[in-house]
Length: 242
Ligand SMILES: NC(=O)c1ccc[n+]([C@@H]2O[C@H](COP(=O)([O-])OP(=O)(O)OC[C@H]3O[C@@H](n4cnc5c(N)ncnc54)[C@H](OP(=O)(O)O)[C@@H]3O)[C@@H](O)[C@H]2O)c1
Image (cartoon, rainbow, N blue to C red; front, top):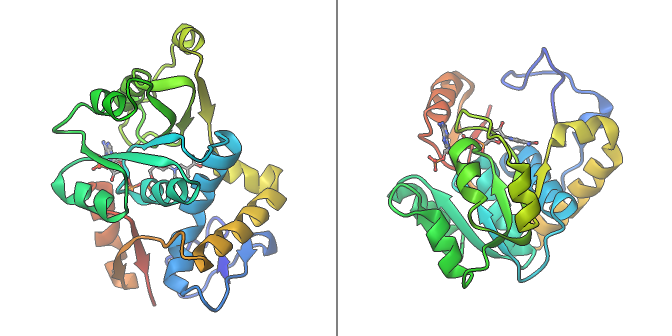
């Protein structure tokens, strides 16, 4: 079983509570660490790519912060959907992570302008779907390489600034800006979350997704691990094992 603990009790503890609706079966083939690393980030990616963006095989997906938790999940899900995946990350070590994830084009945004690179990769067309957990300047620049009928998925704001969408630009270029708040689906459409879980388990069992776990830490090591996470010194997911 995997579960999202109730607020208050939290997850970094030897025992906690969760409502029945927040508990999901995992098969014997899925190790606990994979189940822990899978749930939130792959649920978000699946919902965003399939329901919010209706991604289609052959489309180009640009994933920002691709070596992070939600980014690495979106890369795997994009590849499983048959998309051509371009991803950005900061620094050579994280770019190596992108390459190991099998992206078609890995970009160090500190060294290269991702707008030019995406345009070149798509013969000037731009990315059909952009997965943006960063916001701010990254969102602003993304509007320069979004394709006709493209979809920019608003996932998070790790860059520290909420971008202000220029609606006239969206109209002129014919693209959509789609907000994605996965947690709200747990309240308004819990049956959808359960259906996505079943699909994620099937993708895992078919070998099409496999959560990227960079570290396994003990309960005592959690504060230091969170500190590394907060200073962008990690990639993929960190799992706490008792
Ligand atoms: N919408 C939803 O339903 C949903 C669901 C889950 C998570 N989220 C959100 O998605 C975001 C990413 O989560 P995550 O689990 O992928 O986090 P993460 O593993 O820490 O990855 C975040 C990445 O953002 C990049 N980044 C860019 N500017 C940054 C800055 N100023 N400070 C820190 N990192 C910066 C870093 O990559 P580089 O070093 O390569 O730049 C970092 O690795 C968070 O805002 C989270 O709240 C949203």
